[in-house]
Image (cartoon, rainbow, N blue to C red; front, top):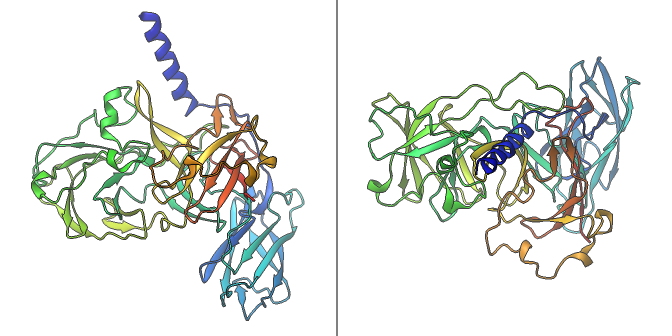
Length: 465
């Protein structure tokens, strides 16, 4: 028995070390490139990002040209950097990892039209920086599904401060700081509340319904305590709504208890060493909350633990979104994820479970929009090479791509990379069906920056035809 316990402890220790202390090997990128190979333009103003790997060492500028199909500059589109002559320059300064310009769409395409603008990086004033990766990006006026391309979600480096939501069919992503929200209120038929696992939050139901009663913190209500019982204080990482740490909000107010809330951990600002991560900063403190129904919406009550009065806000459901998010620290709702039909992948830190050891905090995590209808499964290259996978390889009526049953949001999870040593898994890729029914194949192409910094993922994807 002692040997079994020792082996278990060693296994857990290796897993925990794998998530925080890694060596510097891995796949690197370098130079300057566009963040995305293509995108469908749905907004009037769209930022176009140009990325540097590593950060620019000196000041300089990038020369960008464009070619247009069935559109004209000044009539159908403009840029905030004047480009009437077909080119413009984008300045950068030492230390920049990203510069951008705005693309202004002045007219929409009608059905059947092909309208697009292709921007290219022609020259960079610093010869030591190579033009590589996405040397061009295509902006489509029409809303046909993107055929794919390459993308580099801006997770933010070894501190991984950002949650990045990527829409494969549009080729666009949305970024938000992971500390910008604390609780999310489900927009569907059920009355469910989720907590922010990307910062390690945890909650415990109390016996009282009195939000104004003074409470004290509880060290057991935390993640990473090596106690299997702590899984009771987190949302089940599979993402199923019937397994949230906060019970379903009852129509009977007397059933809705107060919760002790561990607000998790702040985002650190000092980068980790080569190949490592530093994603857990100082504790963010404690709150107490109670959630009631308010017609077809929610009523949120919250306060500091020692407070004898509370703040109360109404949270309306919005069926266009999976959740409406609220920040207990900022006392306001927050715009976090896009509408539920317009994203597929979320790059984030994540509270997961290690069987037998309770909850634990992961870096480099990718969850799928299972609640919005995204479905995914893994393919091994030993079965079909990525380049060879076509629609003929799809199983007709594949149960893994159906939306009539729930799917675990962790199919990709941390399964795309290894951390001892730090490297990509090259023996697998993923088939992803988005909420509109488009099917893509996707493989990861980078985990680290050129300098070996974590939190710099990139991937390649293509429409399955």
